Amino acid sequence: MVHNRIALFRTERGLSRKELADLIDLNPQTIGFLERGSYSPSVECALRLANVFNLSVDDLFSLKPFPALSTQLSVHKKS
Amino acid sequence: MVHNRIALFRTERGLSRKELADLIDLNPQTIGFLERGSYSPSVECALRLANVFNLSVDDLFSLKPFPALSTQLSVHKKS
DNA sequence: ATTAATTGTTTTGTTTAAGCAATATTTAAT
DNA sequence: ATTAAATATTGCTTAAACAAAACAATTAAT
Image (cartoon, rainbow over all chains, first blue to last red; front, side, top):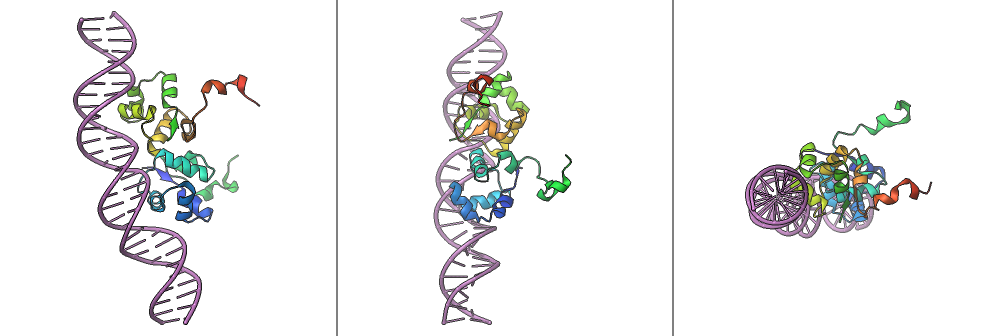
């Protein structure tokens, strides 16, 4: 199983699935399936998604669950 | 079409397809198909491959062709 | 308040492509 | 030439991706 933060970054940017889908030439339904983890996209798909968010694929997809973003804010940082 | 440098990094490490396949629980034939670009792997596959090479997915896969590694050596670097 | 109209999400087929297993072919070494 | 190792091909199974339709939820307008 592969984890992702598509829904997080999509909503953060105020995009609907359709809007996001149009940006990267993908089906809005497919985005739905991805967001609820029904399947793991092709790396091509993943690259297009990461591009549109200006992220690396590794920031968007992971084999291990992502920590909550709130724990990554400055008050929690070690260094 | 998605480009990758699997063959490059695999041979650089002196691994056969079978050896690489065993490391990440994948079919050697599948690696063959990936190396000659017959298809684009799932992002799960891509993450496992990147892990074994200690690379990011973006260093291993790209929507645009990769520049020859020889052009990235220090003598060519700008900064 | 009810109905329409619009927008967003989910479900259900169907098609296409990824991945596997087995086999064939090539390459390398003796 | 023969064997072994590496790579390529073929056929099949499963999962990704799409298209169409169903299902909310919101807003508009009467």
